[in-house]
Image 1 (cartoon, rainbow, N blue to C red):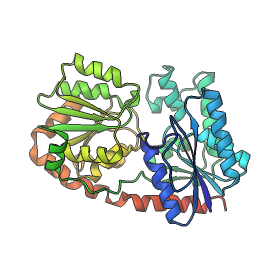
Image 2 (image 1 turned 90 degrees about the vertical axis):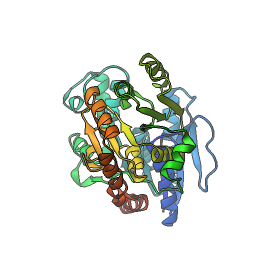
Image 3 (image 1 turned 135 degrees about the vertical axis):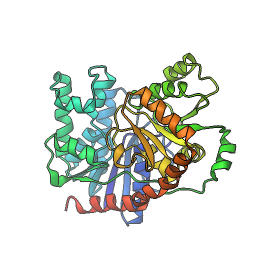
Length: 376
């Protein structure tokens, strides 16, 4: 069987789909299938043992979108399945033109995220589901749902997102929960060695991912400013970086907050190993890879209780949960973990075992199986 994998980001890009798509491609090949990738990129991706067709992000949006549809359709005609982890509308149109079955990994409500980025909506993800909205929002919702209905199967990483998708009218039998995987760990240094390598001293928090409005990292900075002696290291880049650096200076956090920029996954894992806790302050989420990466290396998580996060981070077992936007509660959780060695040790001891059942080979095998079964 030949599978076209469609993803909006690809290494060296940082983010969940950029980690998931190559790992899935390797699993498909190991299972005896052929793979072809369609993605967008700023420059030609590094060679792989399979074709990676890319569309330049320098193209203006309408032409870029049409180019992606064309590449998916072309690759689809040579394939048996199309699997999309992002760019779902374009993948659905391309698969329809190629007359091939489509399997989708749904990771977010793109209609909501676009409305927030354009400042057309300021409420929660749940509020957005109940709001009729303007013509643009209604069009985005309709095209989103039409694309998903084209899929023979929709895979979602959390029960939370499944309920959301069912609310859009998707058929329950076609929507399955397959959680994001905990990574297979490379050889990593011990915690103390990792701290020496990264120059980490004192109680240190780590966060990783795209620096976007969704991550609400301004709350992280404000909370850290309220707790003396706590440091924060951020791995990642994105449109909010400049404003976050400015906010850090305004809060007097020079020397306590470090911005590392984009880092490959192994560096992120090493950072989480060195940290006392991982920090997630997102205003909305599904099931972020950073949480799973931190727990996998044995580091507890302080996180906002949004989306599918509470399905993995359990209060008082492997981390602490707070309400989104509550800087006071976030600061108190940080202070609690920084000052309670016994609690911090217990959460760290439980972290890796709490995601053992989400081991990457096991989860990817389930995705491969779903791709193999659909469309027959």
